[in-house]
Image (tube, rainbow, N blue to C red; front, side):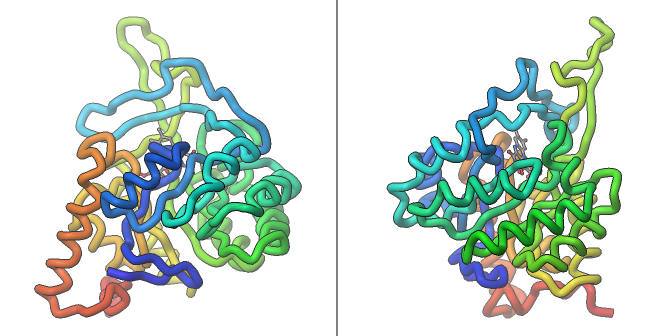
Amino acid sequence: MATCIGKIQLERPVMLASGILGISLDVFNRLYRAGAGAVVTKSLSTEPWDGYPNPTIFSVNGGGWINAVGLSNPGAPNFAKIIEPNKDVPIIVSLVGSIPQDFEMMIKEFKNCKITAYELNLSCPHVAKVGLEVGDDPELVKKIVSTVKNSTNVPVIAKVGLGTTHYLTTVSAAIDSGIDAITAINTVRAMAIDVETQRPILSNKFGGLSGTPIKHIALRCVYEISSKYDIPIIGCGGISTWEDAVEFILAGSSAIQLGSAIGENWIHVFNDINKGVLEYMERKNYSTLEEMRGLAKKS
Ligand SMILES: Cc1cc2nc3c(=O)[nH]c(=O)nc-3n(C[C@H](O)[C@H](O)[C@H](O)COP(=O)(O)O)c2cc1C
């Protein structure tokens, strides 16, 4: 079950996605013991952010969520102190910012922490001037990725999503500037309206759709990225079963992340997926995940 995402080596391929249970070292330890190969932290900014007022999350009829939490987080300097004692858990620190200097400053804060990789959030669809607004600007993506790559020897992942610029343009800009891997995808911009009050349900009006409804969009993106570029990919979006995980690996993912599935199946989902993937590998006679990666692209 070991996997290499470029230079990142993990014992298991299933990770916690950013933003779900992502700010406590005790929780990270528990998730690691529950079968997660790595945990991605909540996206961190240069300073603490409060996020939006409630309601910030809406449960979609038929599965999935629309959230507009607003990237509430304790800020990189405070969070670095929280994870400094970490010895065992592969932690991927997610960073969000508007300009290259934001990312440069945050990386300095983590100099005493054991970090497996950084994941640049270029794709949050509901906070102004960061996330998708950055990912939609390929020139800015190039500047940010170059700056981050010059600031650290730790591998750097770009997390892309569906914005107004074609996401493959963002992927290409990140690769041109030396990115080590791509996570695809973030939530998809969406909304819900209350028919009685006749108003948007979320305080921010718009949020990001996650969970089962976006699985097949995310899968298509992984397949397209892996068909076009030679770059390690982490698939994310609507994964909740071992079959979903296998689909993403067959599409070209080296690893996968899950978020919404934890809200539905709690943290048992990590070991359920690990067990199911392993049994599938045994049944199909694969001794490594790498042997099955991208097989769906074979003509
Ligand atoms: C409540 C919530 C908060 C999230 N916060 C972040 C975040 O801080 N940074 C980020 O890159 N993605 C964030 N995401 C997106 C997830 O990491 C993931 O990309 C998305 O939910 C799709 O995966 P899923 O369908 O398995 O949930 C958040 C998602 C949810 C539901």
